[in-house]
Structure formats: structure tokens, C-alpha cells
Length: 306
Image (cartoon, rainbow, N blue to C red; front, side, top):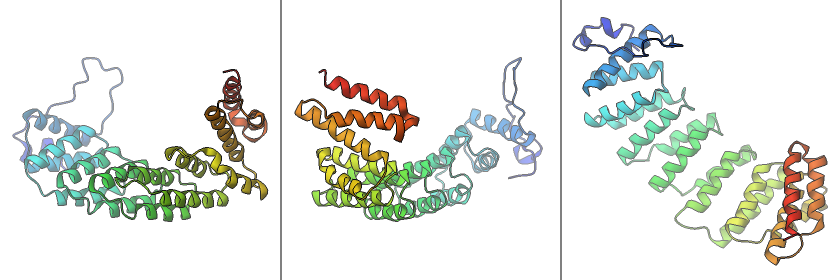
């Protein structure tokens, strides 16, 4: 960040700054810092003349240092970089340098994606994302970007094992569960039946460790639904939990899903136990979602009228 105002810098004397136009009577004008306002006046000027030069890159870097979420500035930086045929590996170094303090800034992630796509080289990406996720294991931008990078550069190998480590550390990491599903079913090489069964067993083990964790239950149900397996195949596992006195509302929820699917597939009256389970959840085990369970009860009762 430069200490000298651009309006005082002789290197910029050939540029006429363009002040921000808030209209004649702005209701609540933003009190920008003087140095930021000065830099933006010169940024407007160079975009108006379509100047693309090294000094513009430095100007943009200065503005980013003051306001890293300024999308327009990032977008123009890309245009300048490409117009100058700049060394994009150096730009990657620049992103690496500032990303640690801006890991939840969408603009930085998008800029990196644009640069990496232009380079057509994803060799740095998994290590970069790993460093971010080590600091913030549920960083939405990191996981979203990882999906893009893996698909864009075919980096599927080893990604299931990567989520293993994260789930060992925190079985409630919903981001890791979601990513695991993405890897399993978006890989061009579709999972074999052996792999699906392995995933079911893996998930059951995680449920035993944390039976009140909604993420693993959701993942287990998704495995059955995605592979068109009837949910009643879950009953043996659920009964094992019941027999070992596991207490969890997700046991009832799983049974409700099974009974509902059975009734629809077999076109028969739903098992009355499902109705009682909805009441149990609404009144005792999950009262914070009482209105949902009463709604779900109504849906199940309507099945019997169909």
C-alpha cells in the first residue's frame, strides 16, 4: 500500500481523476477514507480510458489492500493481466499471499478460479485448499472451489480418503459429508456396488459413534435413494441400534421414512407406528420442530385416504 496519494504522485499527473458521482443530493453518502477515495478516483479514470498497464495493476493492488471485496476491481485486474500477457504464476503467488487473511472473501476465490482456468494447471490447488480447510474445515468457498478444481482437472483420486481424515477429526463436519457425496456420484467412473456397500458400512460406523448426528443419517439415506435401494434394507442396522439402547430421534425418523416408502411402493395403508412416531417426535424428542412433525403426520394420514 502506497503512502502517497495518487493525486500527489507525479507518475499519475497525466491522468484526470474521476470522482464518485452520488448525484446532487445524496441521502446518506458513504464516508470513504481519503486515500481510498483518491485511489478509486484514479481507478475510474483508467477504466474510462481503458488503460491496461503495470501501473494500473499496482493501483488495483493498492485498492484491493484497502477493499478486497471490490468485485469490479478484481474483474478489471483480470482484464489487465490478460492484456499484458502477465506471468500468471506470479499472480498465483500474489493470491497465496493475501488469501490467508481473506478466506471467506468470494472475490478472491473467484479470481483464483479465473486465473487457474486460464493457466489450465491445477497442480497447486489441492495443497492450497488443504491449507485453508486446516484453518477452517467448514469454509464454504473452499469446499465449493474444491469441487470445481477436482472436476476441472480430474483430481478425483484420493478424495474419498481425504474426507475420511476430516470425519475422523469431526464426524459432524457436514461439509465433508456433502463433499463425499459429490465425489462418489460425480466422478466419471460411477461407484461399483462393492464401493456402495463399503460406504454404507462406513456410514453406519459413524452413526454408531455419534447417533445424534444428522449429517451421517442424511448421508446414509442419500446412499440408498441415489442407488435405488429400498430404505427397508436399513432396518437391520436400525434394529441393532435399538437393541443396544441407543436413544436418538433419528431412529424414529428413519423408521418413518421406511414406513412411508413401503406404503407408497406397495400401495397400502401406512403402518400406524409411523403416525405414533410423528407424535412422539413432535411432543417429546424433537419439539423444536413440532409444526413440521404435525405437518408430516398430516401427509402420512392423507396416504391412508388416497
